[in-house]
Image (cartoon, rainbow, N blue to C red):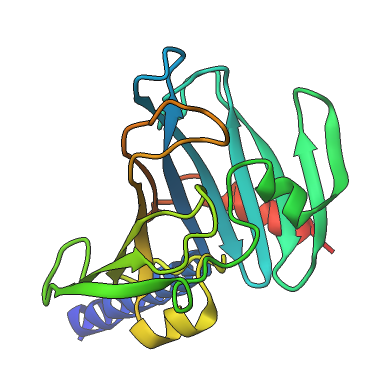
Length: 244
């Protein structure tokens, strides 16, 4: 009888612990963190080619809030934080055009800023990339059980207005749920594919800039989106809960 009571007590303790773990798991799921990595083709001084300039930042989402973390460490072509890294912060509500910018090293705290100013100065497209009207789908590769991507589509330019328009666009889609709250492409394009965009590449054919007589070689700009593990969950939660 005594052993039966102990067994019931043990089961009760296990159920309570499991319930707390389950609730904690759900709460942790409500905050998501994404790493955005960009590869920029930077023209060399001798103008004979490009070098691959790598930048990255993080996007953290919680309910209707979005936090952007931009690393500041004086390092170039570094895709990971180091011991000198600190982050400039931009915090917005998803429906608001204005948010708050902070830089602890420059002693800037919650300075009001427009979303276009924050993102436009850091290499984000301010308007959705228009695929339907400017590009034609030329190939499609479906990957049923792909570890990273489930669909790869390639488009070629139809209406090249200037050299900033890529000649070929390759978009990598995933069903892994790495959904970023940024409208990189027009809504019709995203809805048509019913998958999340995990990466895209812009390929530029050899081209001249303005009145430059030199023909620059082909180059590629790419941007990838990956969901990453949150190691400092409690600090993010505390920060977001302080927001009014």
